[in-house]
Image 1 (cartoon, rainbow, N blue to C red):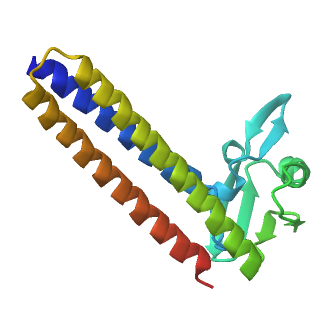
Image 2: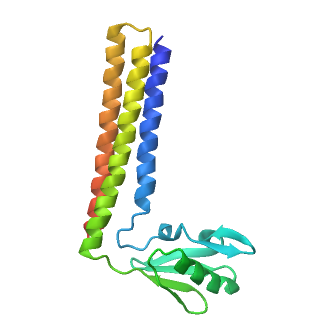
Image 3: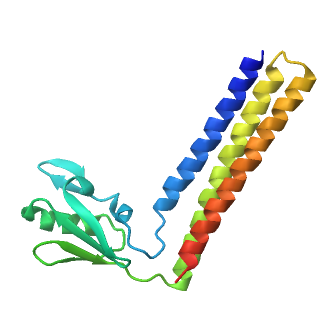
Length: 184
């Protein structure tokens, strides 16, 4: 009997952890004015007839906080990479020096910072909704079980503690991201 209840709790915990991991992944895509190779993760280039992620045909580095450097493994790809960055429409203007491509990351305006914070908070709210949804599913499963009311109540308390801890983690993650975005 308790194995069934433990399984319900474990499943809820996995779903809540997955929501937090998804939030962290989504927040990586929200740039905070600092150069980060992840900013180019959506860029794909035509490499011998197939769309290939930029990171599979070039080294992407950050020599300083405001610069991305792209060093292609084959020199003839420089034009293709430059074109792909422009086509990706991510707001960067690549500069080609014949050897590599340099992208200067412009500083964020105050208005853009506020938009990014709003976007990040929206992602956090989505994570909280997923966590609460996992709680609801778990509580429904507990109510369906044949366990006594006392046992059900104890497991519902465990689920609520998991929920509170997960939401607290989300709040901590978003507070850090907000601070990172707003720091000039």
